[in-house]
Image (cartoon, rainbow, N blue to C red; front, side):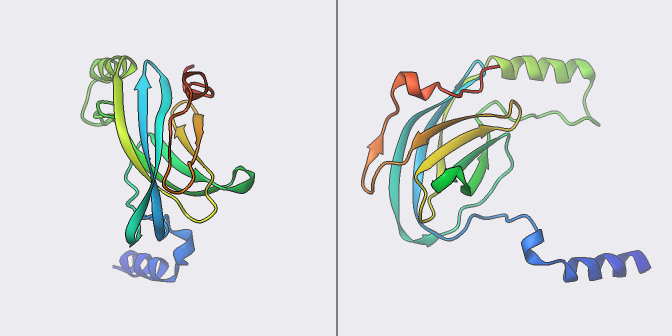
Length: 164
């Protein structure tokens, strides 16, 4: 019982800034990214700037990948997490065999998937970056001006890709 009271007091006294945010900041627009993953390479195929009808916050789900809004000086302003279809690790260490985990990893290595990602665009965001948490590599694209869409050139779309 004492441990429960101590835990409750700790949670109540923890500053909210120390807790991870489950949502993005309140934004008036977002970037809609078309992102492709193929054999270890992540590419941003299209970036579309979309105004929102009213200010919104976007949920941060779990995921291997982060889509980040980047501001001046390369500073991360906000982000959301995501996974490509068929890329999320379905195995957990306590309910699978080593052989099943290896098979799952082998299947994920050969996935080709394309997905849409909604990224919050706070004021000052000039670029978007997709970061791969497994390989620690990223790919970046410019955010188009209001009302615009950009399609990175094929050569630029692969720069900084997640290929090992």
